[in-house]
Length: 473
Ligand code: AMX
Image 1: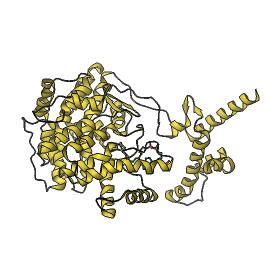
Image 2: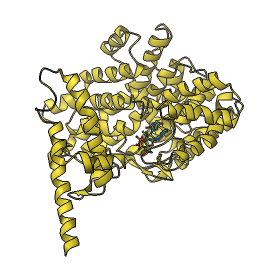
Image 3: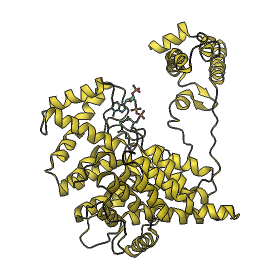
Image 4: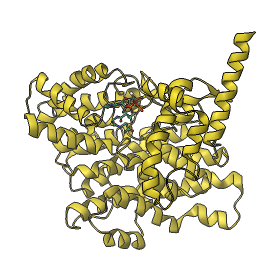
């Protein structure tokens, strides 16, 4: 309650507002010097507001939600998937584990269903037959040629630019060929927008394996690698082959990976970024580009890269087979260093992410003796014990990112700062299925109302006065 006391005793509303006023600080100071003075006070002030007035409503919405990343507010409709705090992600009402089991297999002997089938299911709500999933594969193979201007741009990019920044840039530049932009410019009817969004989405998804593989080979393999789709391969087969990893088990891992990372309802950063940008009628290429900027954040998709960096540090510090106490101490040191344990926790989930479990089952089937897999499986038991003790972590259990890296490393995809690109390629399926529906249902431009600090004070004061009146009565 330190901050609450600060609010009570030191920071009256008027003083807090003074902090943001022009008269604060001495004259002649630069912007940064002024901010250095004002930020600690404002932090204290806003934390105090949350402590003392978090449950006070602004209209019908609690201050905690307004100041807490809009948590818990049901403000979006998502047709493709829904997230349950303990049961995890459902695609079209079906738990992800069941989706994985029911999706059609392309080849005899392949253990996993295809992302093509998942896209069909997410978009239409119907589980496809093998033939219907194969039609999607054929369609993507037909549409997947990357235009020369995009190839030229990718080859010209500095190899030090992060692969996610390259993916976002490539998607943005592909809008040059947008069918939606063309149709919109010619005055297409609003009710038909979704048809062009569908065309662009199909084209973008079809090109993504090639674009993503070029980023990989340019950054890590000196630009050498296949850039042509093989019409006899499925989406994951082509992607894996272009990455230089044509192993059948790895292709199956890619199928699984692409299916489980595809969709996570509408409020996560990547899906919401795409939805927000799309609500201004930007085309799918720009929407996906924005989505990838969000996915590149360390609290979202970059966590899979962070997990591997953290695991590598752990193995370097205490070896491949450390004792439980050594692991606990390493986790403590991470927390003492002011860092989060990557791959653990979630904004909505409150139990182990089923996408983690599905990957662990794959690992147990294909590579249970891999030292990385063994370590991740042990951490699953140890990390939650340590995080629970902090008393503030809403979900101490692993999320999807805690597992993916060790599986990729098992199959020799070693370059950690590429991992989020794989996530991004998969996420295209969900965010673009959502975008098709957003335009089909004619959702309007998104425009939440923000309030000023003085509005916030006024709301709180009014709520307090209301409470006082009730007490007197
Ligand atoms: N390690 C240490 N502390 C953690 C933690 C973790 N893994 N997860 C949450 N906490 C802390 C938060 O930092 C916060 O501390 P603070 O009050 O001092 O700021 C407190 O616990 C409460 O946070 P929360 O309500 O449990 O989580 P959130 O909804 O604010 O954030 C998330 C969710 C995912 C950002 C957070 O759990 C986190 O940073 N996890 C590690 C990064 C990660 O794995 N991200 C991937 C998420 C899945 C994805 O999008 N790919």
